[in-house]
Image 1 (spheres, one colour):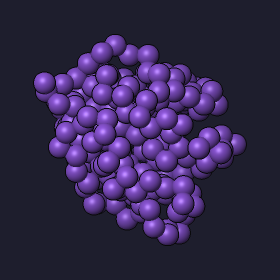
Image 2: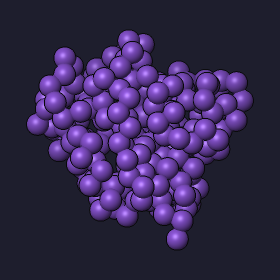
Image 3: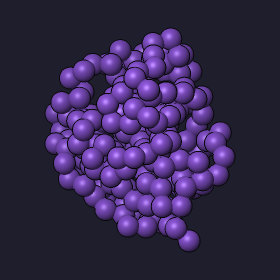
Amino acid sequence: MAAHRFDPKKLPSLNDVARLEDLVPDAIWDAFGVPDARVAIEVGAGTGMFAREFAARMAPESVVYAVDAEPAMTAWMREHLIETGGARIEVVDARAEELPFGKSVADLLYMINLHHELDDVDAALSEAMRVLRPGGTIGVVDWKREPTPKGPPVEHRAGAETIARDLERAGFADVRAVPVLRYHDIVVALRPLG
């Protein structure tokens, strides 16, 4: 699946504010349903656009870890992201399948346009389960599996049904799709309490 990854040479396109018209931060944050998240982890943060939006506006008292495996992305974030308000953004070099966090540390873990690029979905979701606290939320935002005017080819997309099955297979509970975006699916689930 690595051949379908985002090309780091297109990094500037990740900072295009027009993306926020389709990937509406307020709608995404509301769909996650964790308004009081103290620790959030964004896996596949790219240039940190959403980590910055969430930290500044939705979770100003929180720590948001912006994780990416691509050195060009983490280098860009370290150079350009600044602390906003009371929020802290910590840039972390790591793969989704090997997160450098302790067990049960996060209230929220989310991925935006990453699910279809994962090399090992099961390993990535196992790591998500490990780092989320019991009752913590995972939010997966990715392209709908239908033709859209932009985005990867349809055959490379997962779609809400596949994402939901992946989350259920990983042991997440209360899996549900939240249909609020035009070109993207949002699927949220909880780490079971027990």
